[in-house]
Length: 128
Image 1 (cartoon, rainbow, N blue to C red):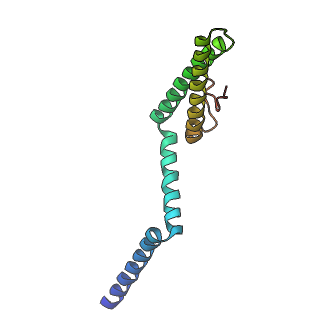
Image 2 (image 1 turned 120 degrees about the vertical axis):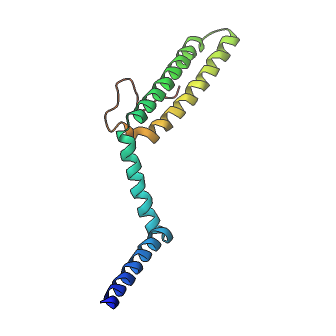
Image 3 (image 1 turned 30 degrees about the vertical axis):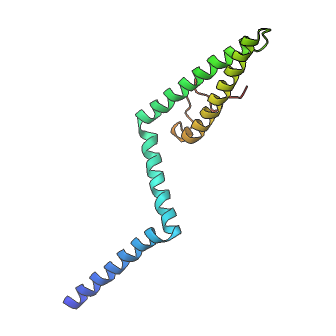
């Protein structure tokens, strides 16, 4: 009986060491492990209200900044005054930078919305 239990213990130990080695030492094992924990993290993020609220608030603030710079640009772009034209160009650069940052932010966080995007959040901000 002791030999049988010892053999089962050795067999289980070999299995555990093999599985541990597979997940820690092989690229396929690492990929499976990382994909699993990525999916767990995404599920956690999808169900957390705080994360959704933070993403929505960040999007709204970027949209507000973008709209302010866009309006400044539209107001001064056709001006005869050189100073006002420089304001327009500065506003255009800020608006385009904000649009770029916003579009990247949405790409990284679009899984949080799960096809349920609030009406005041855009999936893309156009460049000027």
